[in-house]
Amino acid sequence: MTKEDCSVDIVRDFASLSLQRSDKFTQALESINFTIFNSVHNLGYYMWNEEGDIKNLTEVTCEDIITRLTLDAQPPLAVDSRVLNKNIQQFKMTLDPQEFDSSFPHASTYLPCLYAAKEKGLDLSTIDFVFGGSTLDFLATKSTSKDKFIVTKIPGTKIALVVKYDPYVIDYSDPSSQFKRLVQGKKYEDKYNGESFEHLHVIDIGGFKVLFSSQADAIDKNGSTVDVKTSIPNWWNTTIAFQMISNGSVSLYHAERLPKKFGHTLLNVSVLDLQTVMRNGVADSVKKQKRNWRAQIGVKERRTRIKELEHNVLSSLILLKKNMNSGKYENEAGTSQVLSIIFDEDGKMELNPRGIEIGDLFPSSDVMDDLLSKTETD
Image (tube, rainbow, N blue to C red; front, side, top):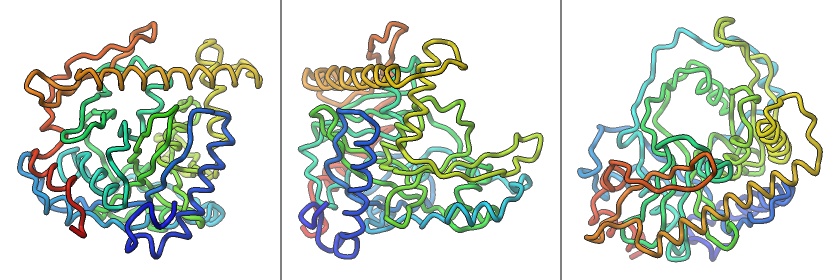
């Protein structure tokens, strides 16, 4: 990323670090043997402040969005894993719940990432898709999960939004959140302060420009995004590797822990690079196809599976873009409509009405127009 890629005031302090981060991620992408991914723009991070009263999106104003955003923010620096391993202890299982549902401002809608990207210098007219953190794996594996992923036309743009939509309640007192705080240099028992960080970057996928906006838990000394997980690796398949690509991570902090009945004791913290996570994930994906978890997977089988995953992503993007161009994501009145993306057992994509409105995803058209048509310097 160069100074021309985003506004001068945002880049001034972070240009050198952003360049290092871009180089590291580009090198990581090249190491995983996929041919369709090309890192185009690294737009850095922004912080979203979740504090404040819950609002219906129809009530959200431009001020509600702008005042919660810090465009030049950086996620916390990840603590060295050797330091973490010297402080092995049991997770705090008696913390009071810190539960929030996915209503505004705890779910920021998808407008802030677009506004932040525009303010950082991205020409939104060059973007074909906006993806969340789990979209890539969904398309690559043609997951048959029902009614969780949606596609719609972002109002006022020619961009298709393809994301997971599965409203939930998050508890920031759970072991996973506790470990993230530990990696960030905080204490297990610290309360969530309402600050979340997102990483914005653009990847060219087979000729389509995709803007990714994904949670960034921490960064390493080079400024590269660090992913943080406590789940069991046997469950990962390619999910975590594609999440790492989506949030621009070159490394993963993984906590090995005992089960809940043993108090979720943290046993060991390891740091894995993207190449290792993807290699293991692709091998597990082949084992799943074979229905044989003890199978020995060779290089040839991994490369064949990678080509399959690439084909699935690219063919999905071609179909989604074709439907975009044909007006599939708008109703007769020209209003954006939300459709579920479903893959059947044969991998065929189906698009069906989801039963939610565009107003469940974005504020009013006036707010959208104001934030996406003007810059802070206008």
